[in-house]
Amino acid sequence: MRKHIRGEIMEADIWKFLSKYDRQIIFSIVLILSFIPAFRPLMLPLPQYELTNKAFNYIESLKPGDLVLVSFDFTPGVWVELGTAMKAVMQHLFIKKLKIVIIAFDINGPTLAEKVINEINLMGAEYGVDYVILGYIPGMETGMASFVANPRMIERDYYGNPTAEMEIMKKVKSISDFKLYIFACYTWIDPWMRQFSGKVSKIIGILSSDAIPQVMPYISSGQLYTAVRGMRGAAEYEQLLGMPGEATSYMDAVSLTLTFGVILIFFANSQYLRKKREGI
Amino acid sequence: MSWIRRREIPMLIFGITFLISFLQYYIDVPYLSEINEELSNWVLIMSTFALGTGLIALSLYHWRQIAQKRKGYPMSIVVFIALILMFLACMYSPSTRDYLYGQIFTPLSIAVLCYTAFYNYTAIYRAFRIRNIDSAIFAFASIFLIMLYAPIFELICPPTTTIANWIIDVPNMGASRGIIIGVAIGSIAIAVRVLLGYEKAYTG
Image (cartoon, rainbow over all chains, first blue to last red; front, side, top):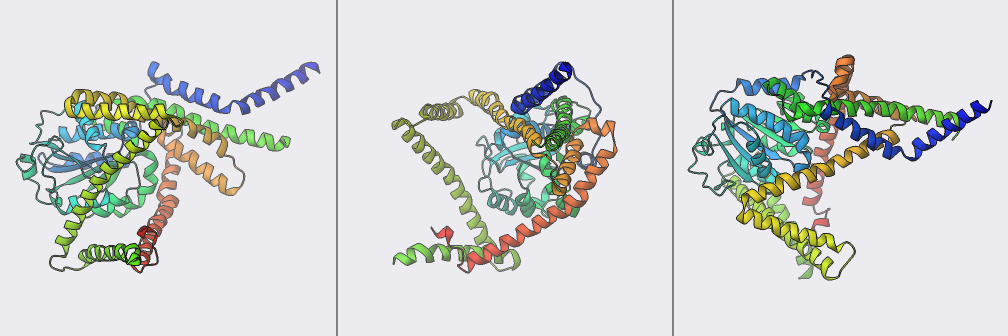
């Protein structure tokens, strides 16, 4: 009888302790789960998603020398989601020997573009001939509209070099010269759709995972050709390229922490039902 | 004179620029697209100037914080040090700039955002209680969408992906379309209201 009472008191103490320090416990578990794969990689296989395949196949179908417009419209805070995906996609563009014009509608864009360029294999591409960073275009949607109306509007690149003399820019006459437009953003994609849709052959969005549900109507209508969904998409893209990198290494941590999220939902509801039953 | 200064001039400017941008999109009128392009360039110039005025406003605010030794003023000193350091690095040492941006600013930005992830997990624990049918739908949809982004679930139980994709492709698609159409209609309504002079907040 005494044992039973002690057991009940202990059980009550555990629930009390869990309720009081729930935040600390959850933070600690998430932290531990994020670190486990760094010491012991689980190497879980990664099933491919059709949207990522679509992006890969379209870039694969482009011919060497085709013009591609890329805009970096995100901040360093979302590097893990979008930076890793941009690295994988940009690597593919350089492997395919495409001509890449880089712009940015976010002030952080040019620096992030530089970071990506520095971290990937350029496959012997030459600045000004095979790729160029035009820099930041202010005004957001108005900036987009101006660029679409006249892609040669920027007279000097990010480093201050005159663009008119660059071989790559001589190929650009109008926005329709670009075979593909790739943009990476973490917000509502409406401005990009309004200004670029129908003006370039295909548009691919590199988007954060939480943005994917919002953009599905655009993919369904064909205004957005396809999207790479954040870090998961980046990992899938790295696998398609056969070059597992940063994103692939993070996927184990994603799997573990999200599993914990699902467990947490069930645990929270069992707690809720217990309290309801006990009339707390 | 004062009533003109307050209301009519900004409304007139809005009306003219709105009509130019609006009409050039639908009607092929000579010179209208050139005027619109020029107006767009003005906006770009003004946006660039806004960055400068933002910098001045930021500096003035933090200068006042330091001068009056308000609460948290040491942080304002940090702002000035960071500002000057980045400016000098950009002007004279690109390698230092790369270091400051890539090795300090970027990891700090990521850290701030990651911090919210920890709070999200706490939110999952506190908010995902199935109290009624609405919260049950919300919780189950969330579970399947969480599962969609973790490859482990796809390997353990492949139907989770099918269900999650159905949620994205069917109910989510309908709701998102509704939101997009609603936002577009709302924007048109606001534009008409501003054009007719019912919305006056922007005139100051």
